[in-house]
Amino acid sequence: MSKDNIREHSAPVYEGIENAPARSMMRATGFKDADFERAFIGIASTWANVTPCNMHIDGLARETEKGVNAAGGKGIIFNTITISDGISNGTEGMKYSLVSREIIADSIEAVVGCQAYDGVIAIGGCDKNMPGCIMGLARLNRPGLFIYGGTIKPGAGHTDMISVFEAVGQHAKGEISAIQVKQIEEVALPGPGSCGGMYTANSMASAIEALGMSLPGSSAQEAVSDEKLLDCNRAGEAVMNLLRLDIKPRDIMTKAAFENSIKVLIALGGSTNGVLHMLAMAHTAGVELSLDDFVRIGQDIPVVADVRPSGQYLMSELIAIGGIQPLMKRMLNAGMLDGSCLTVTGKTLAENLADVEDYPEGQQIILPFNAPIKKDSHLVILKGNLSPTGAVAKITGKEGLYFEGPARVFEGEIGAMRGILDGEVQEGDVVVIRGEGPKGGPGMPEMLKPTSAIIGKGLGKSVALLTDGRFSGGSHGFVIGHVTPEAYEGGPIGLVKNGDKISINAETREMTLHISDQDMAARKAAWIKPQPNYRYGALAKFAKLTTGAEKGAVTDLNLDV
Image (cartoon, rainbow, N blue to C red; front, side, top):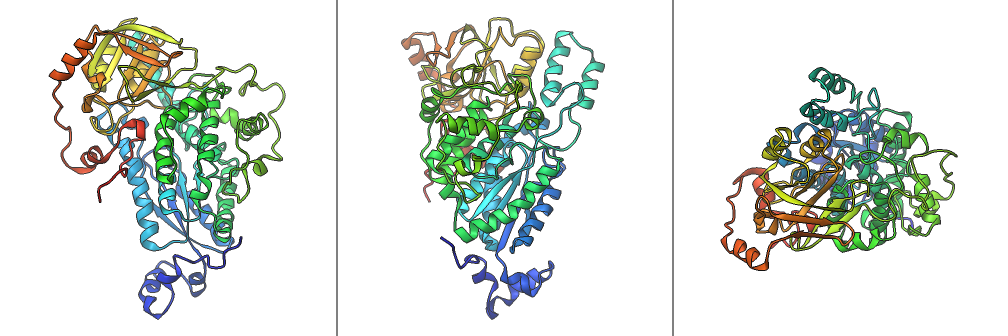
């Protein structure tokens, strides 16, 4: 059904004699009479020189503006923030990473709501700004879509950002020199774009496309490419079409669409952060989604992408053979996806995929369903007396399915990093890093430095790591994050002592602290809640408002307003 009034939000603010001051303000920015007759489209840009992931997005925003204007709308660019996990990992600054997701969603909501834009296009290029953009779109529920900034090209020698992190561990082991680390450092990131493997950025881009909230192909394009510029230009026409059809984000982001998204995330071997962000995005869209859904869905979906961090190939190499569209077509034909789900093209997922050709003969990146890397999900939800409300593991099968060993406990990531590099952590240990949850950190920082150090030191198969923090999409090995309840809230992870036996069973999905019920009860009785690390500012507000990781660590659930 076509909608006649596509200026539902802007007209009351910019039309009529009484709104002359508003028009005067916009004339100062370059508006002409004719512009006030067009639908206003806010273009949320996450441009910044903070990180290579987003350094080019100003150009993408301007290309998007051209597309909007050519399609009969009036594009208005505004900025929100971005941060860089790759820079802040392992430091106090990393606590702001997840917090930035909420700030981004808040800022998009604030600008579009205040300025009365009729539609929204959000452009993101790094881990947290992508779900933040989607959450902003869902809150506003005005016709809109997401554009992925695109992936970075491979570095010399088939290197990427994770190569640099793991080089630090190799140096600590004595395998490479400081000069060799510097050589990898200098070539791993050759220009703009998000980290090059199936890490969190490319995982979320793929999940968002499967969700129906970006144009077909948007998730599998290099940051610097003609295809990405065309994607931006086409977005202008798409948002105007959504306005005319009165299709809003919540019409697209249904339970079935989220299930499609999770299935594609699994097939690609995507990041554990996808679990956290999907829960948050679903909450914002008004969709009931829980860890149990990941368990249910994961039983029937194989991992078929041989991509980093667990596999061999980079995103650019997947793009070269067709990206994720052929995979989605295969999944649709196999009955794994719901093809009736609506997308931002105004068409269904099945209609979008109808003419997609399969991968070229002989490619080895996407494996057949009957010969997968893993027959079911690598995103394993673990419960047990150590994680009563759930934890998230990334188990591809290459790490093994069972681990047992004595606990090596660290109060925070920095101490753990030193313990790994200095040799305190030994083969057979279960490294426990606690006090890094959403409330306790606060901010639930990533443990990329410790996991990379473990891999770099050659301990990837002989050491397990568990934490109430989270992991980078680049982390791999026998690692379990999002342990809930977190230590700060009195969760069992906060009661573990050095030497306690811990077992992790990916087949039975159990994580067990092997102490008696009486000993557990005594430790709980003696536990004293830690003092908060921050008492004012953004981190303190996040700690006060956030839910646990099992609910997506969102800040607007069950508010008593």
